[in-house]
Image (cartoon, rainbow, N blue to C red):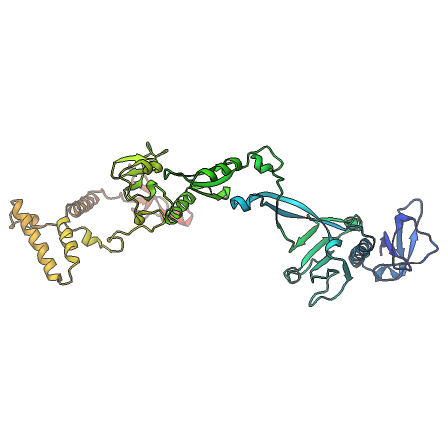
Length: 468
């Protein structure tokens, strides 16, 4: 069995000893895992280490050694930091939201993700090693006087259970696969990343992070202009959704009768229509073509740019703010953008193919009679017969001819004539030549190769049998 070499051991006072500190051979050291005696090896040719007696190697598992080493190192160092007033810091990712303009304009600014550094000893002054907390036994339990808890877990071969992670408590899970992985603990500084995972930490923090740079029209720490999305209704009734700097936003609040600030991500057309309708219903004097009963969507590619409205009264395309100076402007709530579109009376009516193929005059008469409940099927058939009779009389056709008596629609007659022509063409198709197979000698028309001069062929049956 290979010799197990450890870097760390316990002395008689349960203090963790590092072999790099050159411990003396006169003292007794114990293994962190099995508790048996370790012997320091301080030779010149090999790397210094602690080792068991050879008879005890099989009683110790390196995985358990790493797990106990990490949690015991964290527990002892954390207690030392609390006693001596030293920080034990962690860093995790959080989203910062600047609320400097929230009170004045009702908007916030998402600055982005940043690492936040926190001293755990300032929030959790108490630490317990493998203390039971309800149904869980964390490796190290951190608590405070307010009832808040934090679990510190060491993951060597098995990670923390999902049930423990979903309990709602803050959890820090550190991956340890070698003795060097406890270095963040020794540095008293654990950073969230690939080998350190943080659960149930507050990820969004609001505050005044820009330091007043947004007042000058700049994003925090950059030269990029800071913009606010704002919906404005002017005194003339014209309205607009635009982006302005905080300096211009303050000027708009003093001049325009109606100003509403929005997040920058909402500066879209549907937001403009929604805010315009809301302002009208709130009693604001808004004049816009989207609210007029005569407005329609301008679908012309030539005039659509800058003129989304086609006025059905003036027969011209216009921008939506033309209503502020239009005498024909008539607001009507039935045509507001937020109102559902009215359906046609024919939208829910099913028309069969046979009914749709009848003459237009008969369809019009039936539509008029469908609103009356007293109309019977016999009267509808008599109306169709009367229409056929009137049509034949007006065209001067002779009723003695069966061909002229037929009053079916022209499209149906043309389709029947086309079918007759196709059937006639099929009858004129010359028959296939009968050939004699050169393999089986059978006379057949089912061949894939035929020689016209000799009448020889190769039939498909011989091809399927693999004769050629």
